[in-house]
Amino acid sequence: MNGTTRRLMAGIGLIVAITIVATGIDLIRDANAQPASASDLGQATQTVTREPSTTDPNVVQALSAAFRNAAQSALPSVVSIEVETARQQATRTPFGLPFGFEDNRDPGPSRGFGTGFVFRSDGHILTNNHVVAEAERVTVRFQDRSQAQATVVGRDPNTDVAVLKVERNDLQPVNLGNSDQTMVGDWVVALGFPLNLQGTATVTAGIVSAMGRSLNILGRSGGAVAPLEQFIQTDAAINPGNSGGPLIDLNGQVIGVNSAIASPTGYFSGYGFAIPINIARSVADDLIRYGEVRRPQLGVGVRDVSDVDRDAFNLPDLSGALVSEVTPDKPAAAAGIQLGDVIVAVDGTRIADSGRLIELLNNTYDPGDRIAIEVIRNGDRRTFNVRLDTFEPAVSAATRPREARTSGVSRLGFRAAEVTPQIARSFNLEASSGVVITEVDPRGAAAGFVGGGMLIERINGQPVETVDDLETIASGLDAGDVVTLIVQRPESGGRTIINYRLRD
Image 1 (cartoon, rainbow, N blue to C red):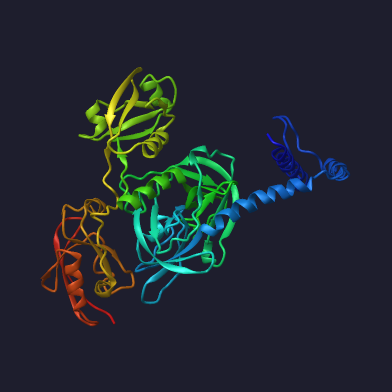
Image 2: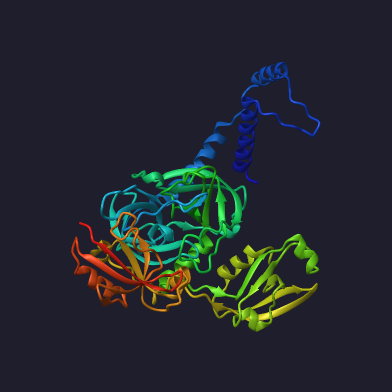
């Protein structure tokens, strides 16, 4: 420990001690300790106040400088993101994706705001998937107050990561850290544009309060087919608008991408969550290179080991990842891994829990890699050689569903997309092709008449097989025209006819 570090620790200890005395907090030494009387407290306070201050100004300055230097090294790379979208997105609680939206009740697109940071000097910018998932227009504003229109290079609902591109090659990228080395108790700083506060980015500080946190929000937020959640939890304030901003350490290196908050109100109330940068970096590299994410697939569902599992399967301890589901015709099943096996090591690396297995596979291996998986089966250790497969991308560069354009379809009062396997699963559709209603504008002409998941067969007697068909038909309609839809209902698969009139 060098001299500067010792002075910092001494200063922090002194500040904590002074705070305890000033606020009247009792330190209970054991279970039999009794609270001090009022007179005792008064006397103790007098005794302490007579002690001369020994705070070293250099320690305070050094502590401030550590935070200041970290923030200033990353701030030039932080950007504000404004998104125009055809629908309004609500914040989810108690665990929400904090993308801020204006409450725009007027006709036309809603505007949302988020944060991002320069990932590469050639114009690639990292942010959250939920910031740009519904974007029709993306504007990036830099710290020098210049701005540029951005295109979405790719996005991944499974990790809530997205990559944007602006036509500039003079940008200063952030310094990327190693989130695997981040530990509970480390100081961290969050940068971003909360609550649509423009100008310079807002800086908040806190500590890492947990690692590897799973919130089960990506699977509920839409589009995730194989959610990967290993969030860094922090008490640095994160609010709507912070989404996609960097979480940095005191060296100014990015260790996470701010993504979610735990709050009953939709605003910061103690906990924020960031995607580890090692996960985000791997996803971003795939999106830039391929336009989609190529994740290795083992073909099992896993969960943590319980004390009952330990007794039932004759396990030495509670470590490992219990195989709770085996997918037929996938690598694990082909190699001989069975339901009830407990995975304890991969290529010699110990597996402490299910989260560690998922993180290791995604951060270390590629589809097609061969790995050695060690399991415990009924008390015996066995090793299986497995060649990893690949997950179907949640959003594929080749098969990304084409969203209906707003020029014609928006006046119908809903949004639609061509059926993909993912969309079919989301709406429990038997169909493998066609056009399905994905969302209904609650203030639009179709509200109360149609619903999400309805498969469109015909509009005004004309067949609808693609989004382009829908656009062509809708573009020929005017305000006041009657719309006659023949659709299949998602619940029963039965066909029905719906009539409504377009509005001005």
